[in-house]
Image (cartoon, rainbow, N blue to C red; front, side, top):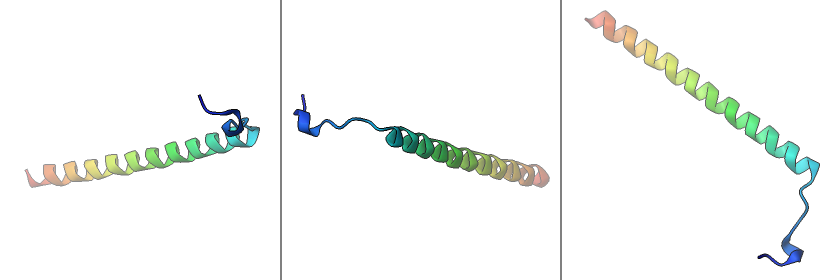
Length: 51
């Protein structure tokens, strides 16, 4: 159990900052997935063209 001087109350700014960080991160991950998916489609198109 941490001693009381190390326990700090969570502020509204902490929660908003975490929510913003989380939203930005999930947005980046989504963009990454979308670009990887389009890369896979391009690879598949090239592969089908070679057949």
